[in-house]
Each structure stands twice: as C-alpha cells, then as structure tokens.
Length: 422
Image (cartoon, rainbow, N blue to C red):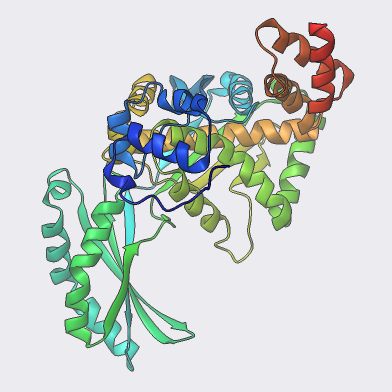
C-alpha cells in the first residue's frame, strides 16, 4: 500500500510533467492519470505553468456560443465557458424572444476602481481625515507616478474619499483612491498605488497603515442593460404576470434573491471565464452590490411598460479588462474576445450585462411556466448518460428514455445502458 503524503519538497522547481509524476506517486494513482493530465488541450503546458503555481495539468471546461443576441444594434456571438447544462440555451432563447423589439440596450457608468488604505492608531480621526484630504494633489502625483503607462492611455488618479469607521479595535480612517483603469481590470494598478501612498498617509497623520488593497465592490464601474419582451413573443399576459410575481418574490425575500442572482451569474460568470477575467472578483462585487441597501436584493428589475409588454433591466458592478492576466496570456480567451469583436473593456462589460439579463429572463419564464426542471433536466440527461459510461449513439438513446420516463437519475441510466448493451 502506498503511503500518501502532502509533503513534496521542491515541487515548485520541477516542470509540469515532473510534478505530475511526483503527485501521481504521492497520491497512489495509476499510470492512466499521467496520460489524462498530461494532455493539456489547447493550452501549452509552459503557458499554464506561467499562470499559476505547481501546475500539473489543465481542467477543460466546455466553451459554448450564445446566439441571437442583438446588443446596441449590433449582432453579437457570445462565447460562454461553463459546466452547467441549459445555461447557453437559456441565453439563446431569451435573446431570440426580444429581437423584435431591438434586443438589448446597454451603458456603462465608467471605468473607475477603488483602492483602500486603512489607517489605525489615530485618537483624532476627524482631524486625520482632513489632513489626508488636504494632500489630494500630493496623492495624485504619487499615484500617477506609480503607473505612467496607465496615465499615457488616459487613465490614472481621479479623486479621493476619506471615511471614518468605528471598529472593535477602535476608529479607523479609510482612504479611497479612485482611479480610472481604462481597459484594464485594474487590480494590480490600484494596489500598487495604495502601497505607494500608504507611507505618506502615515507621515501626514502619525497613524499606522495596514491594509492597502482594492475593493471588489466596484460601484463606480456599473454595467447596465435593458430589453423589452412583447406579450406575443413570451406567450401572453399570464406568462408576463408569472415572471413579475417571481421577480417580486426575489425582490422581497433574500432566500429567493440568492438563487435568483445565482441564475444571473450563470450567464455573467460564463462570459467572464471565457474571456480570462476574474470570476471571483465579479461575483464578489455583484453580491455585495445586491446587498447595498442592507437587505440582499435582486440585481434585475422587471416592470410592465405602457403597452403592457414586459421590460427588464440590470445594473451591476463589472470590473473586467482586456489587459494583463489570463485575458492576455490564454489563447482561448483571446479568441473569445475576437469572436465578439471586443476592442474595449467597456464594451465587454456591457455585453456581459446583457447576457446576465437574458439569463434571468429565461430562468423566470421557466419558473413561471413549465418549471425550471423540465428544460434543465432534459439537457442534463445527456450528462447523466455520459456519467454512467454511455458512448456514441448510446448517449442520445439513454437521454431520451430518461426524459420520457421522467426519471433523470443515475440508477435508471445504468439500467437502460445495461439493457442496451445486452
């Protein structure tokens, strides 16, 4: 029996292939794992090794294409990377049903990000707040000198805010550096600026600075999208009213809002991931924004227009970029941007917002009519078939029978597969 250990000295100094061999030996796995993880797909092992630490392989996520989207008068094909069935289909269907009214109209509030500098050890926080505000021009100089490339591209320092917070350990003075990051997501830029400004804040106030980092609540970088669905296209007033009732539930109850917004993020995160952007940052910002009133709420709004049609809108933080990180280094991410014809981070964020709204419409319509499981489980049936070992034509045969029986379960799929092969 192999003795497993997590202690593998010098693993980080090895090549991906050598690391994989060490991990397989330490975990007591078979030689088939070497072949499986040794195939890194369309991502070169050297590129993968430059992106994260201790690389031993890649995890390929399906990349689908959402069709039918008209965004600001332009036809757009949108790549979506996700492991969940029905997500891509939902966007396609929702977009098709609002093409007659012009599709989605989008906007962006700007490309401003916030870096926070935490100051503690201050007995007179109000006094310190004014001291920091008086040095706005000095802060601007330090920030812009930190990233001259950003300045060259029209970005850079824009403003400061200084807040006083009462914590359990005493008062803290928090300086917000407000920075225009243009086509970059901006985390590295604003973090560097916060690091550079911190010693000066200590010098001016006599306090101590601790945390110096961006905020993912990017509420000065809001993406907005809206669209109208006619009664004829969605199936009548009863469907419209069902969607409104489902939305009202999410708007009123945080338990429901969590699942409601998860559905929105199914679409949002899939495009964020496909373009090599930071899914965790976007998700954190979205959920924090949804709770800004003190109660966790829906990211979308649903109403009836003067003609009785269904109108939907979304507003959420979307800090995405085209410069740096996986967006620049991952070849598939670059291709995803090319498919959409993306030239600015502003345009990317607006497309993602439209996808989020489309996803929400599709989910609410399903809930208000056939129920979410019918369509989802029909698509999920293929996953179940593959999971029990079906191949080729067996997959479709098993999936169809699972749906017809109304039992999309592993045990049933295994029985059907056994019968097919016998």
